[in-house]
Each structure stands twice: as structure tokens, then as C-alpha cells.
Image (cartoon, rainbow, N blue to C red):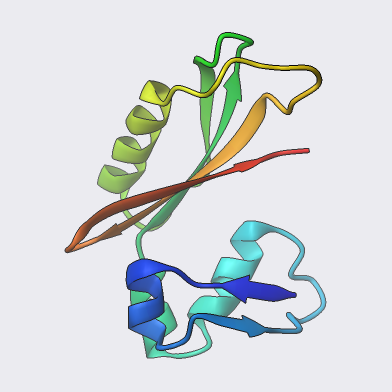
Length: 120
């Protein structure tokens, strides 16, 4: 599996990308994050406050449902991620695009980063 690290995560762990073989049983994003946290203090520090929110989007691009998939360690940041996800707007649907997305929020002293990935 090839992993790419961006922005402050790259700064914390000191690498931009790597190819890894996660152990058997690491089959979800949450399990992968848990495994990465155990790889060293840089990973543990960088990945301590991550919230993953699963959202459903209507054809107009509005979020119609947001569910915390991985709430992270802080109820405050989980709440902030959930509320932020509800305010996201996506491009209107064309053809057979996925209308379900995972939004990953990464909280640090420098601010918040968010990434979206379509769910097949």
C-alpha cells in the first residue's frame, strides 16, 4: 500500500510518502490509523486528533447526512468535525458519480486540514 503524507503530517513524521505492508486485520481506515499511531512518536502525535465523517450528498451537492465514522479522542473536535461536514458543498452530480464521501479532519495547533474521498 502506498501512503502519501501532506502538510503538517509530513512535517511531523519526516517523510512525504512510503510503501507499507499493514498487518493482517488492518482493513479499514480506522484500523490503518491505529496501526500508524503505533509506528512512532511522530505518528502518534500527528494522528492523535483525527475525526472521520461519512457524508451523503444530494444531486445538488448539499450534505444531507453526516455520521462520525471515527470520532477520534476528543468529543470537542468530533463535534466540530461533524458540524463542519454538514456545511460542506460539493459540485452537482453528473452521470453516476458517488454521492457518499469520507471527510477526514486533522486538527493541530496550526489549524485544521480537511480531505475528501469518494466512497465507491
